[in-house]
Length: 157
Image (cartoon, rainbow, N blue to C red):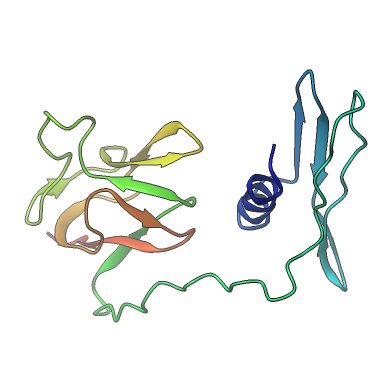
């Protein structure tokens, strides 16, 4: 694993709900744990399983801040469906299928509204409320952040 890949993994873990990740291969063993304390979050790396070059996980001198999603002004009667994770937003189960939902569609709680791909896993995102899709806030095949609004729903619709 390259230093950049390890840093990306650390960034992903720090922005997710995960508290610990362990990766073991023939070449190395990596254990990353997230501890919340007064000084923030720190990560711990274990030693390699076999003698092999190990990349340093020192934080970058000038880490690039994550680009926050643009704030969305929501009328008081509309409810946002937000992304539960970081990943890539997909409106369809595959390129040849129709979209799960479109603007103007009436949805029910528990209905799949999109897919978010995170680390090669495709996660179906279900609506937590029933109502009418007023606005789709994200384009297909674009990256999304944790807690980023994806849809505006009118529960009265």
